[in-house]
Image 1 (cartoon, helix red, strand yellow):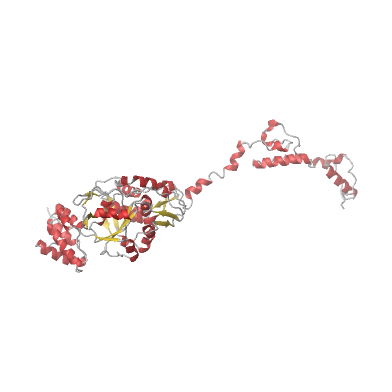
Image 2: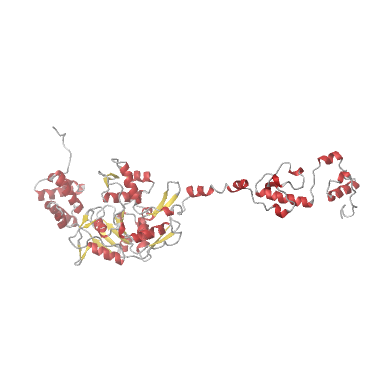
Length: 525
């Protein structure tokens, strides 16, 4: 039992008139027991006005309304009269005695920005500078050949200046392997000049073929290319990009009959050669592609392996392999965009798979076996690879995808591993067609020297012999600088350990000595 249980009703006094009944009663009881004194008139003047239950409910509703609007309470709120304020004071502070209507007014426009402003700028900050996710910029995926355009434009803008692969890669913000492949392709197409082999340096040609075309051959397969590109660029993790409708491989090159030249994409002519009794080499590659049988072209540098593949497949994607080639150069990598974000740009392997195009790995045996292993699943029965760097995306090859590789057995560092050899069921030996060299206008004595040296190379007496590439260079030098310079340069092309033997063969067939080109004394007037 408490003091309040048996307490009489509180007497009415002027001092307690302004107090709630419960408070007045409690004070009366405490006073009766000598535990409190009633406040004086002066004290009650400063005492806070206590609200009734109904008034308290209305104030709580108003306070909740104010909190929702983020409006700071008025400093004089405690001493405000509980009666409703006039409507013309504004809807924001309207304390309607009815709690339900008190929350009905909509939030005033001025109060909205403070509650939403912090959330709006946050989204752009994450999209522009966040860590790579593969989704940012996926819709703006670089088209095939775009890097070649960038490289060619950059060299053209710096006309007359030589650049290494690393310098161009740093300026453009792409991987060295991708830029190196683009430079090699442009040089092979005659659109830029390769000025040095070690380190590799390049510069714009004179006159300058500005903005190299993505490749004239590409119109041969527009349905595949157009349909597959967006699908592969936006493919979600662990899903297979939408494949385009099956289509037959690219149309054959312009001519396949023996003796009829085929114009390559760099404008040079290729003359098909026989393979067996009833096929040309170009026809054979077409049939192998239709059957999905990868082929390995094996032979010394300069025998025409690349020329053959370019003549056979106008929609070819070429990778110039070397010891610096990385997995990212085949599969793709993240590249920084102009806005500071990142996007994943697919490499030549993924492009060939999704667009159903042939992929030629030139000097494939110079590429590290660990790097080549990344593409093996695309070449066997699975015909798919998992791009770990791009959220584990699974890419499946479309119809028309085909792999050709080139192998130069005599090149230092070229290793044909068992794993690589097992992926190529067909191996074709590619040598120089001596009769073709003569028909192209090469001096017959130079062709005889080359054939003699090739025979000795096959017997193991020499490590080098000139091939069709060197013979065509001989012809060009002969026309420009004359016979002596052309034969002397042929001797100079031989490696140091074979140069004396080559010079002896040249002397025997030519009937006079030929010396490598060298500068002499100052020319006099």
